[in-house]
Image (cartoon, rainbow, N blue to C red; front, top):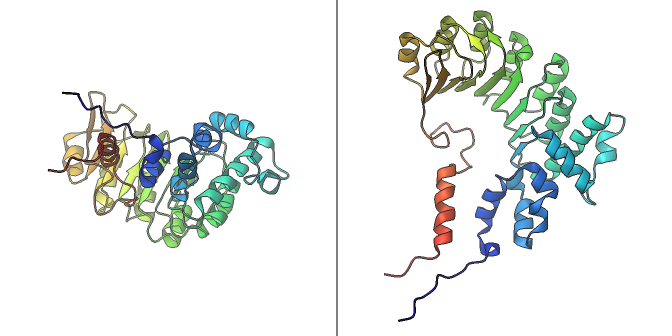
Length: 307
């Protein structure tokens, strides 16, 4: 009896929604000028789908710079002169990439992670082109409050942000709370968090559900203040700094959270559920990675045999 060989299915036949999910996990350098632009038409179309550009990570700037030099902002995507006139090359390059990403996202960009040298002008540039943005990361330590708040004025759909500790003051966070009614998530880049900073966060953003302050020194009193005052908090990440502040009282109070990640001098600890499930997921339209893995494997397995 001749053995039947498995049917070979061409990658070009992969469903468009799965291709989009795959391209969403490809880095921006490859989306701009790498392998994604030199594949079959189905894969190229998926790489340009606006859904692929919902979440844009520009933190790996050396790779992006290399990609942009190869691409030289190919015809149709060139925004170099319009976006970068009068700026130094590094900042102009970032404006050009932001212009490309904004155009391809077609108003659907939800999250953008900026490189360390980005400033409030880049954030304002982004806000004007993506008013529906849900999340941004701006790690710069040199920023003016006025320009930052001007960008926030345009981002009324904002749900979260990651910023340097220099922006953690009552006026800035209260402005965010006032302009962004759905704001739920905050990440702070800080070396040390004292009770004053904790009070500012708790009083200015009382509805926070997700708080991340990694690699930061903080006392037991600060952690307990977050747990006591942020009544709607579901996710707390204070990992990356070894501390003895993780006491039994902290763990007892944190037991109400869905996710708690910490470091201590004695252990690494965490408890968590799948972050892409749940009623209050920041991005409910994005399937959990484990679900996407199952879908890809089901497709590779081929159609099921009729019973």
